[in-house]
Image (cartoon, rainbow, N blue to C red; front, side, top):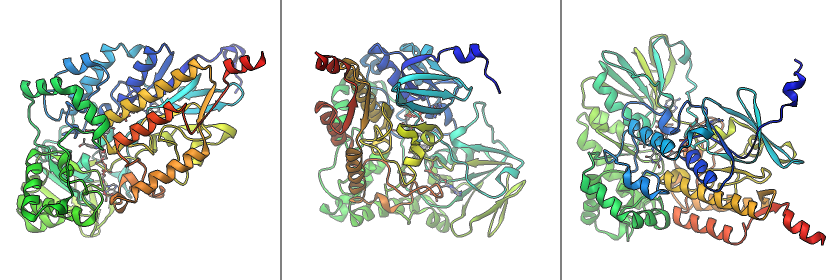
Length: 552
Ligand code: FAD
Ligand code: N01
């Protein structure tokens, strides 16, 4: 096909920074860049802002970090004025919040929606990135920031016959915008991770019958969700300076709570049980903060796991179902712990059946049923709560080419390699927000997102100030960091689980523990020290001012 001369002569639009994704990462990145006077263009494949909260509209979807903490801290006015209605806000409210932020900070004019980025190629001569979108248009930018999300590439399972099913098929991570009504339908849910565990109790209330296909039982703690009282909101608002400080600097996972001062085996049985009971009654993720060695010591971990298994046995009336729901294949917390509302009690309902597909795997899906090796389950609708190609999945979908034509996918074929989770050697001026090798998904992600955005903003400002052309991680620094990330992971129980942290949910994906488990506070300190030392471990080129000075 020939290209018309006029089209080829049109110069590509140029921006200082292209940002890919308009979730919480991309939105805050844009806000900071604008504040610094950079030109920026954000591309978002969805039709609106919010990322996770735009896509995951399944029944029961809500956050598992309390909303007063799972919210931006960069604007004092914003955190003082926004009223969260519940302890854990439901998805529509979090999406409203994202839209409010977009309006309040007037972000939309620099965000191009319904536009997927397909390729980013680094031009070594011009020292610019060419970014191509699915509509065939190309723009150039000095910097590219991947704000593509860690849990944004929903994974459809490779089950024989899935496409033949005649009823509606939904994926929790790609839920329709219209109301889905399961009333009177026989519904099947495949998957019992956080998405399944949140949606199953709600679907069970609508469906005539719900069949849950469970491959691996999961640990879940009651959310104890409730409406937030004015005095609770007021308490957070009054104490935000200290709460945010603790989230950023003290708490390993970026969540403010009372922190443990001892290990689980330092207490006697009664004391330990009382502590677990208190955390269970309080509800939420901070159950794992009862002791400081639950992620490190198998015997300590067993005490918490046994406590939860006993709770399941107390809640679920049928002993066989209770036994199936008791996780026994991984340490508690080594897969992201779930937070639920009435999950286990849902299996006491007469219209809910639990099917163990570990012992009797799914053989195929027919036009009207899921058939396991033991039985056939007739269904009208199917919900896939089967998770994501996490942390690297959305990055891998973009054809990213750095120096010498090296693709990021080829470089990461044996697992992601980054320095600080922020940059990968050979890909100058390309940043990743909450990338593999950073605390990311092991934390209250808004804390980690803000930290990365602030670090990247300071960095590009530093480069502009010194008239630098490129910055990239050195191989040496990257190798050391990858080794460190791996070593720290293997001091914990996390690698024992077949989790998406390990890439184990995707057939053929390398088994590497992807996030950095060294803690949000220590990690922030490392990043700050690197910056303070003139971006130690990063190579910078093109100090035009210095070159001019040297010529005199
Ligand atoms: P995302 O929100 O995933 O946004 C990335 C955006 O990039 C998406 O909109 C996507 O469409 C876009 N994109 C990707 N690739 C391209 C491309 N090639 N071109 C154009 N656009 C692209 N974390 C917590 O800390 N606490 C919680 O309570 C919590 N709850 C969660 C609940 C669910 C159901 C899920 C799935 C995740 C949850 N998380 C939670 C993690 C959550 O992903 C983060 O908290 C946060 O929302 C991530 O923001 P982000 O902007 O980095 O990524
Ligand atoms: O995904 P998952 P998710 N056949 O990967 C099963 C965040 N999040 O969407 O464990 C049969 O955890 C799979 O089985 P197994 C949070 O970080 C937060 O639920 O591999 N089953 C598993 O049971 C979370 O960790 C919230 O044996 C198959 C399930 O599907 C992350 O997102 C809510 C299968 C997938 O679980 C991902 O959670 C939602 C197959 N072929 C999400 N393939 C909050 O609460 C997969 N499974 C805030």
